[in-house]
Image 1: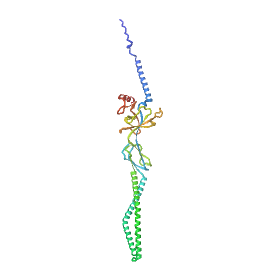
Image 2: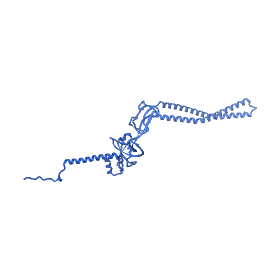
Image 3: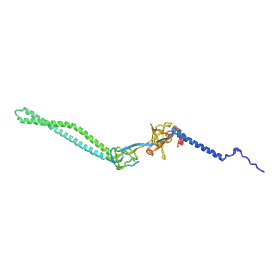
Image 4: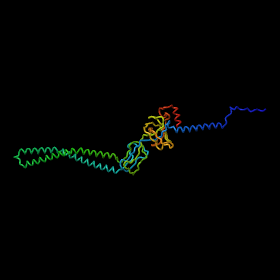
Length: 353
């Protein structure tokens, strides 16, 4: 007996392998097109809805310059050292300043000597003044007495008495005139002495035995003098960077959602850990991005400047290029009080990262 083979239902047939492969190929193709489209869209208008600002790490820079011509005698720090305010960085030797100090010392000594002489003369004058006044009074009394006894006193005796009166009166007048002159000279000499002393102390303090001290606490930059180097007036010996770090970021002009002071943003650098910064100020200044941030396929970009404060324990280097992110379409997910929902913030951060 011959059995007939049952025919399967056409609806129950499995699709061929080639059809399944084609379906996956179409999905992959759609994903590739979608990725390309999102990339183009991100390149075209991404900066308008997503915060992606370029910036640089900044610190307050202090230039420690030579305030007089000198030779570098010793250097006590190296680049990257943390220093305290007032710490000695180097020691200079200046023959010119030492000569000025010696001249001022001689002038101060001369003025002090003259001032002492005037004080001695004034004291002597004050001691002699009562004696001269009494002597003048006595001789004047003797002359008056002799004038009442004209017939009894010889003429030579009267002439002698008149000569003594003249001498004592002249001496008294000299003492009084000298006292007035000394009284006028003494304040002027004391003032000149005070000025000379102040100038000497200021110059001595200014020179400080050639020590160059740190103006603030911070970090020593890469500019370091060499022992034996001659430093002219105004030559920068050290660059000292303050301890407080901040970021100067260039906010794209097409960014559609305004930022506010106090908002938290994310700071990142290539190959380094991320940090959370706080928008400190939105400056009313727009400037062109530095050349290293410019895109060669775009016109010269400009951006509004934003200053962002960094936490004290940051490890970013001075002048390091960084990337600012953390906000998109109105949400800032790094803020302690997010303006959007947690799910939306997580999705946006996942898309950007």
